[in-house]
Image (tube, rainbow, N blue to C red):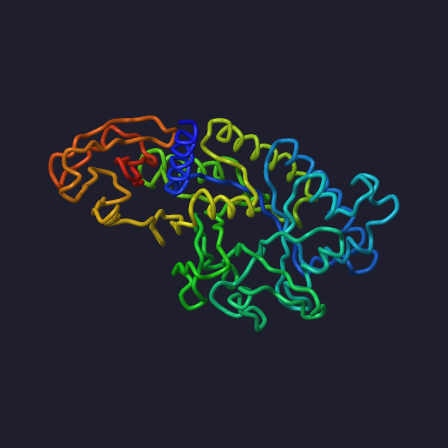
Length: 407
């Protein structure tokens, strides 16, 4: 009896875990990167700028950790080489005797992403410099041009790993494309969501066979001297309201960055401004409307809990790549079971084989609670979903479980 009960429990857990997918979430993250013209290596003047920027980055990382925010830091080769050159002796006294990159990664929980314009050093070389500082580079490509070559390099070639140009013995294997830039940033991919872009020619087409996943930036939010908290929070509240009122599907995956310019972190206004921004966001985090996450955490959630379902909307809330819709058919021991449309915002149509007549179908929510049951008296019938809150549900028969989404 115990063995039978155990087998039933295991079977139920496997069944439920298999059909849980497309659980909606709204993520937010802080992002910054430096450029290859930042000037840290330009003699004594560059050294002075570096030490000022270092102090600002220490203050910024300390702040974000204290407030529970998640920060991605993209670095080009100049900054990493400056860290290797200057971070010695008393310079590292305020970073636990570690170089800046290693301290941010190990002590402050900052995710360190290679960033490159593919000029003097390519992405593989930048990842190598980061590795030499004692930090394993993240799997995130921090910035790429989506529709054209970048100094002769095609982001499609990053699929199988990026070999260093100057250090060919080193290969970096990324998972995430972040950015989706255009020349002078006039037509960037300001998207919410995640998917695997097929190619430069078909960047808005999802191709499940690809290695790299684009994690969207969302709409433009910047922390600079022209920023206002009111404007930035309006962008965020507008997104949350659209999900809450059904303008956007509740089971979508939404990704919003807060961009911070490393060159402006030395300005007196920066820390008070970003403090107020994080505090404002944390009100929504506490209310369950947002979740702080690193790029790699968003990717992991999309791949596992979200079942790698491609979903992208633009800043006007136009669907670029939508959730799977239409008819979903299942065959159970030769018996047909059809559910459509799925996802649905109205009634769910169910078609079954005649042998299902006389059985009961149960509806469970994600928590495993039985919501309702209905007797099968015909091969075609409807399930009213108007009284169901938006989310994922399961249709349970005697022999199988079938997922549907209400939005």
